[in-house]
Length: 250
Image (cartoon, rainbow, N blue to C red):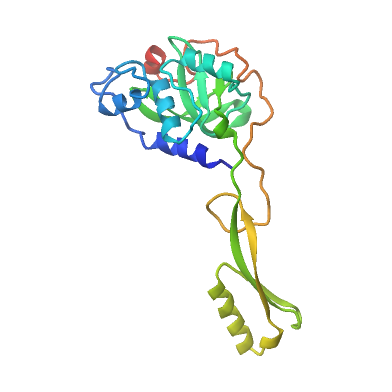
């Protein structure tokens, strides 16, 4: 399950979907310049500036701020932030250098084939989501993205009549719902003197969904796939599956 910083970074990026250069092919425009401001690289290729901005807007304290894909990978190597696998919010860098490109990883679409959903800037002169082949790319994962999500607990309210045959028991999300259950039980002939009630905290994994006693695995960097994040890069000068404009200018 993604942690709060992962979700915040992708939410920040998705708020910019549709931001486009104006005039076209200018590397400029009001919303584009807003994404470039953090690096100061105004009216220049802006895919890395966008990633730097989204990490900042997502609340990452430890982050890399750069307008260049080569510098992004260089700093990540020094910091030990190159990872064998991406997680939500990781930067995916293809062919770092003058013709390189970078986007944020969202999720796997076909992990066996190395196809992922990503979001990035300066692709078709705009911010867009894509399905990308990420085999051979570099993955840059700031440490806050790798933190396990903090557990969330929810109080649930139980009652039971152990004298009933079979034993009568219920869990309810509110105290009021529990008391209504007990009233109905007594009205049907249950003995109020036999009813027991209490509260228990149940761990939840995330901020949505009901209480669960199960413990699904938390987000983590998984076992390495072939050649990812190893420093080999891609064989071509562009992001696999990238648009022609991305190849020329990212």
